[in-house]
Length: 59
Image (cartoon, rainbow, N blue to C red):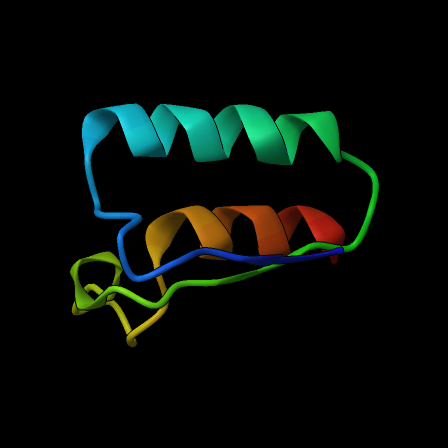
């Protein structure tokens, strides 16, 4: 499942909760999230934390 988030989807508390709930709905499915706003990119290897956590569950 590919989720493409628009540039306007900023790194906010509400958006993080929304994304977490969305990913929970698709638990058990392979998922990929495409972020288009730089706020989601953190210094931890340029992988957004929520995506890293989700991908770890797939292995």
